Image 1 (cartoon, rainbow, N blue to C red):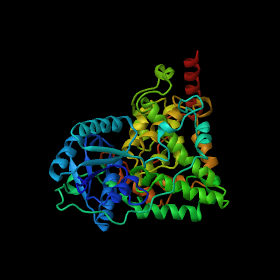
Image 2 (image 1 turned 90 degrees about the vertical axis):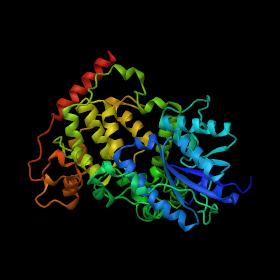
Image 3 (image 1 turned 120 degrees about the vertical axis):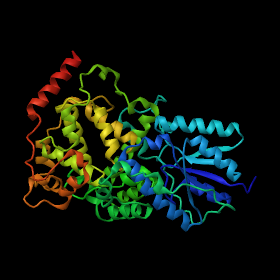
Image 4 (image 1 turned 60 degrees about the vertical axis):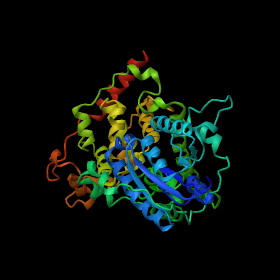
Amino acid sequence: MPDAPLILWLRRDLRLADNPLLSAAAATGRPVIAVAILDPLAEGWGAAPKWRWGEALAAFGRALEAVGGRLVLRRGAALAVLERLVAETGASGVWWSRLYDPASKARDSEVKAALKARGIEARSFPGFLLHEPWTVETGQGGFYRVYTPYWKAVKDRVVDAPLPAVTRLAAPATWPAGDRLADWALGAAMRRGAAVVAGHAAVGEAAAQARLAGFIAAKVDRYRAARDFPGVEATSRLSENLAVGEIGPRQIWHAGMRALQEGAAGAEHFLKELVWREFAWHLMHHTPQIATANWRPEWDAFPWRGDNPEAERWRRGMTGEPFVDAALREMYVTGTMHNRARMIAASYLTKHLMTDWRVGLRWFEDCLIDWDPASNAMGWQWVAGSGPDAAPYFRIFNPATQAEKFDADGAYRRRFIAEMSREPPETAHDYFRAVPQSWALDPARPYPAPLVALDEGRERALAAYAQRGS
């Protein structure tokens, strides 16, 4: 039926520009019904990612209305919701953009098979990545296990030009009913922290475009030299927008390539960071166990501790190591964490506190508005030593010497640790406004003593590594 509606199942593709799914649907001229589904997978997301998705849905709903569309919200199991929508609207097809984590792939495969069995067109589109994970192969036909060869394999690959923004969508004769976004209460688990984090988020496609333009204009040239200094505004901060699809990776790639061709000194390193994200999804597609188990199975017997009181002090930014605590507090205040700080915080938990990397992974999953399942899993395992590209003996980061090197003036630590200053900035006070009241934290109290001496923690980790190898 050429005039039958198309249902577009939207997930992490909330943009009008460079959206292959939306562009293909608009090109058909058929009525388009966009739906977002709060299914059990989305219900299980952490507090910050769920809140941030809700903010993105609100912004994209307004964008769709500006081009003649509407965002229908439904709650329930994805297949059941889609089948009901097909019955209600007479739609002949259900389309969506691909996701690559194990749970999403299993759900999407089930949905596709069931819809096709009923004679409904079920079609998936690229758009979340530069390269589909199965299209990048080694010379032997396998997948890449190390980043540098992966980068060399894709750096000269042709990346299609970004698609123009969709400017008009055909509407159905009657819109199906939907839920109110407020009734989903996606920010409930954030509690009072949502208001604090909201001041640092850049929500929506227009904000993402502005971020990219501002970065290319003013920051990309010094990106390589300044990106490791968390007290300096040197990064793009686009990970937040990429996570929910408010901007597409192809647009970022081409903007970075133009900067590279124009001689920007930091452009290649910026592109390498975008490809690091690709590599993480490449690994998750080929080795889905990376999300929950040691990527290197020989680490299964390593004597990491499970959750423990010291890990709780780490979560609360109360370890007594200022660089580590600033990192954890930054995450609670802004919903993000500088990449250098992520490495220091993760190393401290897994090495100095000998705590299982999955404890930290779950905390990041709960607190990051730029939560990306693949990057989060690969990053934690990379630092812990159990993952790809691991060199654990060289990655026991010393928070004190790292602070001397990358935060020599203390700007980053002062920004987030109120106890270190006579007149702390608002960001430092915001941490105490954002955390659960049950933590009973008070900026007037003395800063805590270190949980463990850094040299002692390092020696303990090295001894455990040596014992593992014996």
